Every structure is written in structure tokens, then in C-alpha cells.
Length: 308
Image (cartoon, rainbow, N blue to C red; front, top):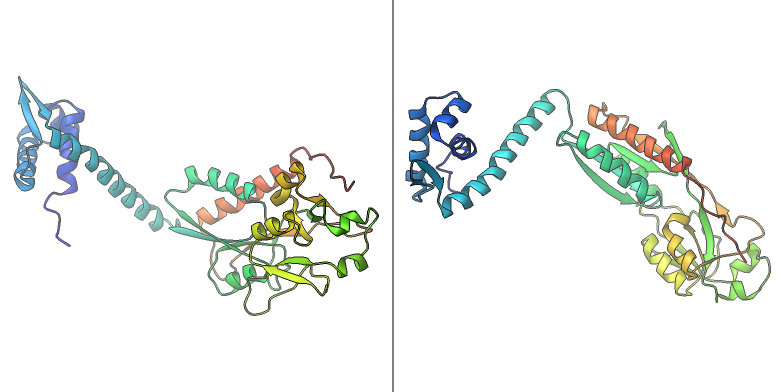
């Protein structure tokens, strides 16, 4: 790639001439001599081979080409300043990136609120978010590919910070054979029906959490696929309430009237990589995740679901 002929300092000088309405004013703002500013702009035009300014009366104004180039240069100068600022923060121990792995069943709305609040405090720190299912979260954390992890599993050797419980509801389409029984449903009733199960994304020791041992079982790769299958009448499943709230309201899904176990309430935990020192950005994100998780707990409860 060809090296740029014009420097960032030259673009800054041109911006100052335009923003301060003249060479003398720009020189004062930049703490430079007027002749230095004039030479810098003249040299720029020579290097680019395009006139940037034209004289209108006693005033220098931008040409059409100058307007386009100046507008683009503002983004360039701003990015360069942000890059220098990021380097300064990194020198002070501020991370360039926080890697967060989350079980797909954890409420996305909580994360959106936490990350939205994190942005103005991030100082350029990026967040790399990864979704896994069940033991997939644990594997990513243990292999060192994540700084933070949100999981419903009790991870041996890690101290997790308690987050909220998530309601998993046993549901099926209103016309499913289980609803046609028109009575309380037992586990024996479920064993003869198709169960839709979410695949554990872990490779080493995948788990069959929630599977009842039914002879008919479809395993899918995501909660959204399971929701689509079950709301179309293909089997039953335990699905997070926050994932299927619209289908419940629209009558595409209906809670199964179970004798017991119709609602499961796994608690989620926030874990950190114990082999890394937590930087300031990671600590801020931890507090925000906890705060917005607690805020969701304190929010007014929805009306209880009816199985009838």
C-alpha cells in the first residue's frame, strides 16, 4: 500500500483554518505562526494536486473538492485521536477487549441494558459476545477464551456471583395431543410424546439436561428453532418464558397442566476467568450485569400463567 503523502497534522491545520475562519485565527488557535499555517496548507494542495481553498474577496473558502476531503479528514483525525486515547488507557491497565460468553437461555434484554450502559464508560474497550448452550459455556471459560461467563451450571473450581432465576415452562401447541387429554399431565404421558431438546454446544461432556428419556426426541441447535417447532405443533419442550412470551400471548403455545415440574427455575451465575487479573473495564461490566439483573428481578411480575 502506498504511504500517504499528507500527514494528520496537515489535515488538522486545514480544519483549523476552516473552523476558525482564517489563517491568522487558525495560527492563534494552534499556537503557530501564520506563515507556518499558510505554508502547511499550500504544501497540502501541492501534494494532493487538488485545490482545497479558493480566495473569495479577502476570505479563503473551500472548493468543492476541499469540502469533500475535509469532511472525510474529520473522521480520519477523530479516529487517530481515539486510537491515541485507547493506547493511553491501555498503558494505565485498561483492557482493549472484554470477552463474554453467555448461555443462550439467559435473558438477552438484561444484557442489552448492561452493554448499553457500558458503552459510554468503555473508553474504546470492545465487548466480544459469544452464545453457547449448557456445558459449551464452561468449556469456553476453562480454555481461557472468555473473561466472563454466564451459566446456569455449578462450575467446579469457580466462585460464581448469583444472578436471577429463569423460568422454563413446559409448553406445547394448544392442539397438541397432550392438551387434548384435558386433564392433569403426568411424566408417563410425556414419555409417549415427541420432546424437543436444545443441543448442548459443549464438545467434551455434553449434557442432556431436561430430557425425560422419551423414545421420540428431536434435538435442535437453538432456542429459536425449538420455539418454532413447538409452536408449530411438533412436540413439547421446556422453554424460557422470556423467549416464548409473544407465543404465549398470541395463543401459539400453551403451558402444559403438569402434576409437577411444569416450571423449572434454574439459577444463573456470573463467573470470571480465574487465571486473569480483572481490569477496570471488566470490573465495570461485572457491576453493570449484576445491577441490571437485579433491576429485572425488582420489576413488576407479569400475571401468572394459566394452564387452562
